[in-house]
Length: 121
Image (cartoon, rainbow, N blue to C red; front, side, top):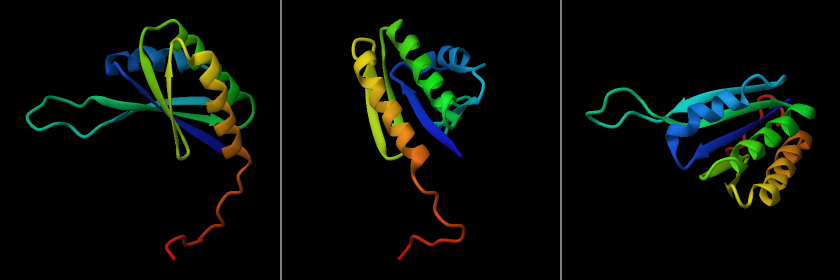
């Protein structure tokens, strides 16, 4: 099982810095996700980073890497874990990121839907 965090940075130009910082942790895959291109624009802009973590230690490592990165920045990020969205600033990272970790760990222990199950009742 894996857990996905969606990380948005207030200053989208810093996503590349964050992607590089997050990369290289065993069990953690970081992939930029582009938003739809705006009309009459050249190229695409990244909307967020999808951080996919293997269960257990990699989730802890990913959240800790986020904490270290954001505490060194003057910015705000938004992390989406399951159906929760959590805003984090450099001042609140130490207090707020444990909530992100708890939400990610709750997803690890949640039962997976049965194959072929249809939720559209």
